[in-house]
Structure formats: C-alpha cells, structure tokens
Length: 293
Image 1 (cartoon, one colour):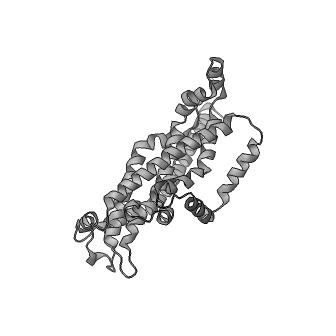
Image 2 (cartoon, rainbow, N blue to C red; image 1 turned 120 degrees about the vertical axis):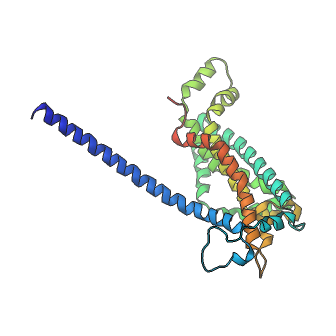
Image 3 (cartoon, rainbow, N blue to C red; image 1 turned 60 degrees about the vertical axis):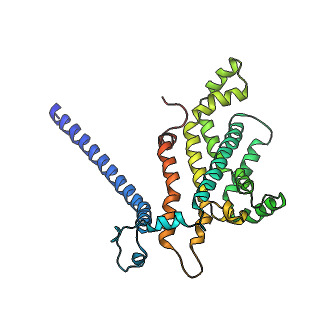
C-alpha cells in the first residue's frame, strides 16, 4: 500500500470513531431528555393546576395552560386563618435546617473516624451499620415513637429531629469521600504538629465541601418532605410542618386540589433555591472525589 492509501484508511477510521461517539452522545442525550421529561411533567401540571379555577380541575381534555388564569388558590391558601401556612413554612425551615446541620456534623465526624482512625471492632461495627440500610424505614416507626414518647418529646421539635440523627447513609457517603483523599496531606500535617482534630477541621473538612453540599441537600430535602413522622409527633396545629399541615386541605368527601397544588408550589420553592445555590458543589462531588489534578 502507498502512503496515500494508509492516510485514507486512517482518516476513514477516525471518521468512523467520531460518528460512533456522536451516536453514543445522541442516544445518551435522548435518554436523559426522556427521563427529565417524565420528571418535569408532573411539576408543570402542579404549577398549571395551581392557577386554574375550580371549574377547570376535572375537565376531560388536558389543558397545560389554564383557560382562565387565577390567583384565587394562592389567595385562599395564604389568607385562610385556619391554615397558618406562613407559620408552617417557618416551622419546616427550622426543623429541616437544624436536622441538616446536626446530621452533617455527626456524620462527618463519624465518617472521618471510620476512614482514618484504627480501633478494635471497626470493620464489624461498620458492617453492622451498613446492614441497617437494607431494613425498611417503617420498621423503626413504632420503636422510635415509643422512645420519643418515654423521653417526653411528643409535640416537640426535638422528637421530630432526634430519630433522624441515627441515619447511616451519611456516614457511609462521607466515609467513602474521606477515604479518597490523599493520606500524604494528613501525614504532612501530623509532621508539622497538627492534632487529629486540627487535621480534620483544617484539611479534610474543607476538601469535603462538595460531598457535604450533596449530603446537605439530600438531608434537607428528606426532612422538608417528611410527612408521616411529624404527623405522629406533632399534635398542636401551630407546630406542624408544611407536608402534614397541607393535608388538612384534603377532607373525607372534598379536596381543595387548587389550593393543594398552590401549597405544593410554595413547598418546592426553598428546595429549588437550595439546589441552585449548591449545584456547583453537587456536580463537583459527582465528577470527582478528593483533589483535582
């Protein structure tokens, strides 16, 4: 073969590689777009219904854009004295924020201990903790309720927050991240006279910002959307969080779907804002672990 033939074959091979890569990317984008569509459509329907009058809730035809756009659902929801949605909103912010900060603190400390410290029974204890991930959460509902009741924490925010602090997922997630960090950084800190606490606070924790942001938004979202546990613990209407509070819009015979959708829209706003603020860290935690090269 001549050199021109080799060159043509090489160009043809490179073109085939680019075409296959383009087809893979196209298939991936189509798949992700389809999945995103199934996720977004219910949210768009929720937003659309929140602006519909009652006469358009049960029409046989689907209208994504309301024929008559109205703010009545939001006005009724926000101006109803029997529905202190503003108080419920602040309650949810408080409970979710305290739970998130507490879980990040406890889980990061425990995860660093499992990742870097050596002690007897470490593997067995961590294996027992991981085994609890395979148990359904409802299995702990009655024991947790009895414990909270005997501690006198019913109708108290402490009773809502404390059981969630014993979660294992955050410990496992942060441990995997800490183990990916170069050990040489901490060894250099020890040589310079740093203690274990100083190494954790000034070296490991700053590098773990992406993982902390990801765990934080997962924890906040779980606490924000929690319905069953606050409903069992909180008896006073003024202490309710948003999910159990909005349940009062659904009666035995009638349901205010427009107001329910308006409440769902209001409920989703803090989570969307939190995600927009932390999305850079979340993407970074997915793309890489440890130090950047």
